[in-house]
Image (tube, rainbow, N blue to C red; front, side, top):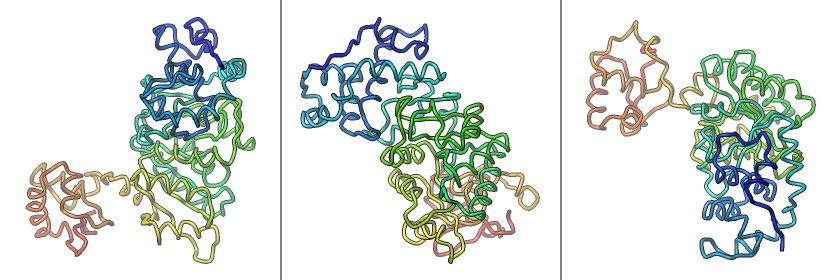
Length: 396
């Protein structure tokens, strides 16, 4: 039988500076239990997710450590899960991981913390059990809206240039950028955001106490200084192929929209795009030269997966559903009512939108929206087509 000390004294001692002085004893033990679970499981373990969701981190640990089966979850989850988890239930090894986090100034964020990004809960049983953060954990609650800019590590000069331009424009306008901290497109997106004075978050497949890739150590230090580096695996963990693939689901879940700038036919960025699509997050892809193998994946997203064609930061704002703002239309149109302004804000100059979609974006009844669209049509401010409505180019 495997045992682990879940007393308040043991939890305080193991967590060190990872616990605040004003936390209750129960909260401290729960925080410690969440940290222990992150040492036991591989990212995306749905059996562990269901067990912890059903019982709480503390009771779930007691169940597997004491073989105290429960009807709260499917016992097959526990039996099979214990084969994976119990070999890692080593209190000394877990203490070493926590000491690494303490020395590196890493924060431990659980669902009980104000900094927990609620959009991760969309992953359901596959959501992380806790997060390890180097930098400012509060940044994680400021990622709505945000954009994931991802792509090939072996990026071309074209791909890096596009990533730099898109990230700088968005970040300069106050939209945070999320990426994976890798070479190529990821690194270009992080660098451009930092130069624009924006906020960027890097998701790591290994422990955040050491930079990966090592060649981006300086860049990741700068990301942590103003934003955050985040992982669901504890400090000291090595990045593996599985962890990279699972890391991609966090990139997609944290962000409001995902844009793939450049990707080959088998690029890992397509995995991120797949997670975004599964979560019903908006997905965009940047076209490249038809002769470039580095853009074969993005062309595949455009052709087969309904990704929106991205040629500028304005396209991404449209993907996010953000209005161009009244400053762009004040000279050409003087709206007669506040409702008219709301309808115009819900329209795009590029994408056709149906009346119900416009009503949803404007927060109005469909019949009211259709009446205002008719008036705007008479004024030449909107265009109607088979696919719906959009702002007339002259109305920009």
